[in-house]
Length: 441
Image (cartoon, rainbow, N blue to C red; front, side, top):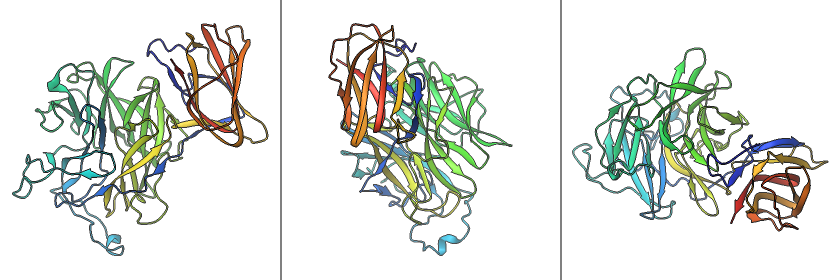
């Protein structure tokens, strides 16, 4: 039996294999993202934005201030591809010896139109009229920590070194603290977060192994100061397709990872999807299949690379997946941008028919039940349907209903009251894709 008691869980993604007891003629596939018509949202348009490279964006919607906030990491000392022709960009890009990364800050009211405020904090070529908050740190992950009662520690960061730092406002940062005992490369988009099921902070970074290449590594801490030694939690499916970075976030009872996959031979990067019950054991969904794909149009704004930002922004009608896109190859000349893809609610991955001649069948594990409304989220094509059958602990079919239209958190109008304290749900899908079910009031 699956129990949600440890996480007070009332929402269940079908990608979580703990939720599913059995399937028949069903395949789990990643969801479909839509890239925003306003893409790219902004690019390298300031003198200090020489090269966004992978952007390494960190995104929040601050509900207290009703403001979108983005921290991103351009190289502020570097060679720029701005204005170069396609022929000029075929020449070899050579990293300058004095290359330097900075942390920049942008805000938005609607998440689409962005401003880069003059913060007056950091000197760049004799002028502080810029949006730089920090010079030097590489691969910074930043998040707003609502779990920490201390206002001076409201914002937290982790970056190459490995080092951490805290801030009251996300703009002015304290002295770096060394993560003693951690021995990783960390030359990636490092990220950290408070893991609610563990009651600890978790850091996700990168290490290397000569025969395999890049690896995803994990560390943890109870106080964001003292960290455990790293452990490898993910490797590439082969040496050619290597995990470059993995922003991680918690949603609907699971940890989801947006894995940047670097194709060594093509020198392009796209984003795939993974999930974990505990941040240690990771399950990749459709390895080799992009979740946020690169464009197939050469020199398009995200033709070369797609690096997901940390974190998605969850709105009522969509999930916003911000990312750094670039129009050239990873190791080549390229222009970078902040971009946006959107996903239907809970649409990370779902079950659909494997063969169209018969329905897909998905049966959940037994789940604790206390009389709540049962809701489902699914896409249903014309002429399709999702039949939901409620089964009690004695495997008796006690209620059923059929849905023939696309729904999000749609309450099931069951044909009788359910008095069981444990139930299973059996789904029959025809020309439909089922993403999640949940309990309402």
